Length: 208
Ligand code: ADP
Ligand code: MG
Ligand code: MG
Image (cartoon, rainbow, N blue to C red; front, side):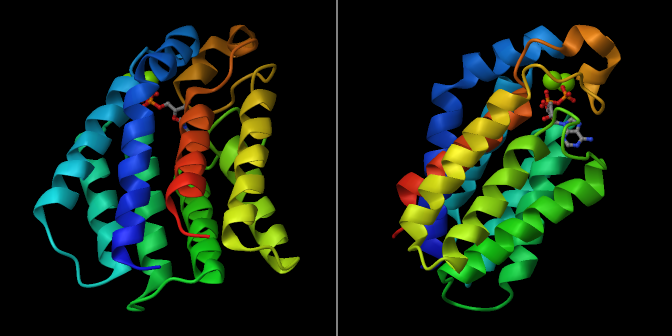
């Protein structure tokens, strides 16, 4: 796949974020400041405008502009974290014109490493890492076992969904939700929910 396929993935993510904006904001209302859906929707609508308006020489360039746009439009905790994720993916892809399944998996692993480096969240801290990490692990395991990208991404979505659901009973140790202490338990983490949409968009939009 190339730049156009990655752009299709980002457009599908934007569509899912818009469709789930109120849900993401409701999750953030329970344990944060009720803006995750509007934050990410604003950012992804800006990304769609950039994709419409600009041309890109490489797949990496698509992801670099996406990361830059998210950093400058989303704000809050999630803007720099999503921005870092896409910028790290871009760097991982290098100058290649074509992205195969292992290269995509490597880039997604780089995104996870970037989020962890930037936000310092460990698994179980009730953040987006709790959905992203199992998804990246599932993607690697599936590809190593000889699965095609489409099937591997479906497993990655299932892993993200499980990771998201598993954040509900957790007490938050990072981000705004951590200010609530024990009262943060009982709700899914909004960032884990949006990351699950990112994986779902990949499973839908990327070629098998
Ligand atoms: P803010 O909390 O600034 O309002 P958002 O509501 O847009 O930002 O995003 C909140 C989400 O960001 C949380 O649900 C969590 O998944 C994620 N998050 C916050 N802090 C961290 C962190 N240090 N590491 C990883 N993810 C984090
Ligand atoms: Mg918030
Ligand atoms: Mg906020």
